[in-house]
Amino acid sequence: MASPTTLNAKNLETLGPKRLAGLLIELSKNSPPVKRRLKMALAREQADGSLKMQIRKRLGELRGSQSFIERHLAKDFIAEIKSLHRSITADLANESPSDAVEMLWRFIDIAGPCYERYDDSAGKLGQVFRDALHDMGDIAHSARLDPKALSLRIISASRKNGYGEYDGLIPVMVPALGSQGLIHLRGLIEANPSGTQSYWRQTSLKQIADALGDVEAYRDQFSPGLQTQPRVAAEIAVRLLSAKRSNEALELLDNVEEVPSLDKAGVSGRYIDLSWHQVRTSVLQALGRTAEAQALRWSTFEATLNTGMLEDYISQLEGFDDVVARDKAADHAASFFDVHLALQFLINQRNPETAAKMIETRFSEIDGRHYELIGAAINTMEARHFLPAALLHRTQINFALQNGRSKRYRHAARHLLACSSLDHSITDYGIFTDHHAYEQSLREAHGRKTSFWERFTSGAL
Image 1 (cartoon, rainbow, N blue to C red):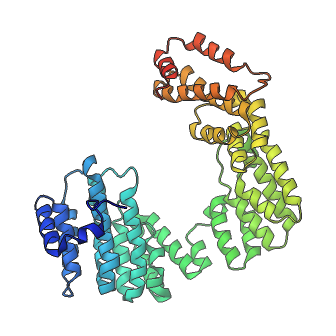
Image 2 (image 1 turned 90 degrees about the vertical axis):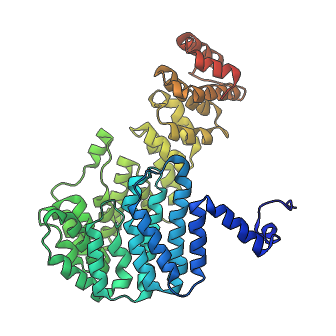
Image 3 (image 1 turned 180 degrees about the vertical axis):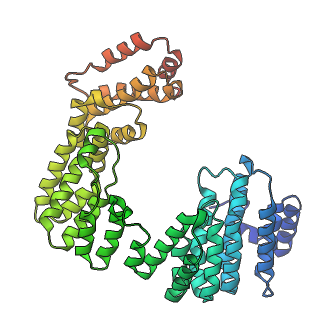
């Protein structure tokens, strides 16, 4: 049972309205944020436009502010921005959807000034403005705004999109614009020369074409030469496929200059764009050429360990063939050229047995710099596969000590303690040195790294 002095709503109610009001007035005298919250709360209770006026006033103040938000004030700053967002989308929108849309335009417009004052490396502030953009689309639809006036506002906002605050504006506004509004917006954009905003123009026209389901208009945004590029061909083909024009989609895909080579992916280990391969399998499937689609899915998986391709391949199988396919995929992964991609695949596929064997046979290839991957693999191995778990711990220790990463000595000491603990469960180290010999080799090679050994000995982790 909570104490009578615990700060909760029930206990505060016992103070009565008069005492609470007095306390709030006292608190607000030395706290501008509290004062603003109270004024906003009072404005909500009025039906004379007071809430809109308070919101507009505060947005104007935020737009004009220039002082940098220090770290100790960041939490309160984000809280106020969120509170303003809620006041517009929850309170003002119920009172007047059209006024709420107007205030949301103003709200998103302060994104730039806010970003200039605040280090948003964690993305918390940006998320508030992204949420506001999506909310504006819903509220604009319910407000039944004039599509022509809305089109002009969209163009104006998109052109001053200095911080990406209006990214995705057109798709969000599709319900509010309707087909006639989209056509009007397209006309306004096409009437203006591209100039320095050619990318914005092309992106906007592509988004409008998608919203209208106009494949030809989408395709027209690319020159004939660009349409022979695999990524562009895939973009257009997926829309042809949606329009039930599978033969045209396949013809476009087969007309590319050069298909991204799966062999090159296997040799270089570099990422390659698989969009052409993915769309082509869907087109082949739609044309009833399942065997070809399956062959392409499997060859793409073999070259890249792409999980999506494997799942698409398995989804076409019947009976117990899926079990056989997963076993075959795991065996292939275990010998894949990139041991780290292989380990990630096997862990994600929840196949610890194959992963354990691979760790033992390919231990020398595992690089301890992959902290997150190895940490996830350790968590999987420690349940039953004790030697592979200990070997993974060793990769972390070796990397930190051999490279003199003193900031990681604390973690390395923890990993060595884990090795010591696992030693009691390991009956056979096989070709690997046992724990005692391994620790002795560390002392001989890195005995002068006193901060590491002090942490290990004291257990101060």
